[in-house]
Image: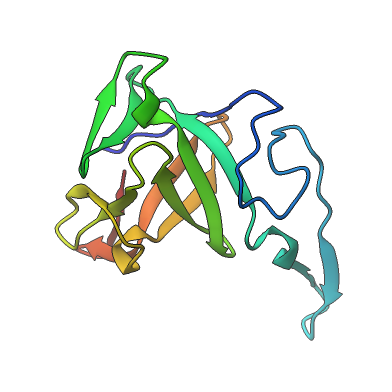
Length: 154
């Protein structure tokens, strides 16, 4: 079983320093996609405008914990004001994100055994597939690793 998280937007005036999109701090901003004709008669959507998008969020699990990354250790906290739970979520590819704790400068990473850890450097273990579920929660799965052909979730 995996955890899923509603992304909690931080205050509107809190913009991450590397943000390239002026609306990236707003969770209610609208973005458009460009439809391209395909050979099968269906439209293929281009989401290239989302690459490099940077958001500051707290990830709150269904079990009522905030995800935190402190000194390389990934865990949960009930404290809403924990500085290690403020996360920068950056789009690195379409549908793939990197999650970094702002105050510890560690990336959320998952090794090939499914163990979560904090990495000082961005590497392949830090690539997570982000999916927005119908229930309003986001799920994060390893981009590179699977177990018996199944996704491994945060």
